[in-house]
Picture 1 (cartoon, one colour):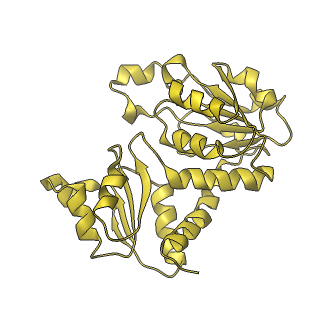
Picture 2: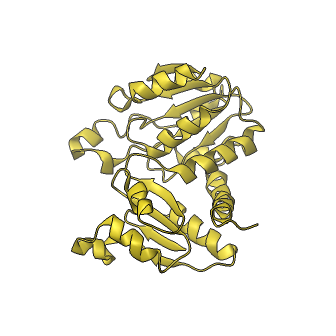
Picture 3: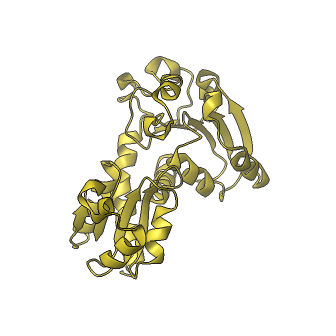
Length: 263
């Protein structure tokens, strides 16, 4: 497996590399795009052509929207999108769906609060589109006005039969929720540090806010967290984000197996 990461990553990169090794495979890895020929002007198309001769499957993360698609068009091997800028993070949504089913026991009729960066988060963008294929969800979209979900996505959810409630207060939503999906505000997606600082501390979930939570509540986060979940939540029965990250290893093992046509 060629592991090509042009953006920083801990969980996604290590999960894919560990998955390949646990399946009995080996890896060639690019930890930073600064060490590749793209810094010399090589296109993603040419990188795709070249890496096809070095590996049987490729995983790519890149800051450019649609970069994985461009890379894959010129590759003769299977390609997994590990995040293309603010666009998509498909393997994260697969592990999130698997985790939700693991924690809740089903994937229909859930009340899901998605909190924080609903504008730039590729994990949210991918998860929303996958959850929409299931039935009768209620989505609480909780964000600062400057980080609201795109109107076309909200309308698409409604057209697919889901209830959507947009609000700014996390506290008011918590008693209704089966799932809290927290996200960090991503400084790297903002045009200026001032714009980032104006919204970065808008949400912080701590243990005191969970007194009226449902007994079946699952608190999830794609990680890394910065300040949006206090450490006093970590040992709460609803805190599932570290287990969620661990489950990602098995999902990625399954994904690699499927894409390589293995049993």
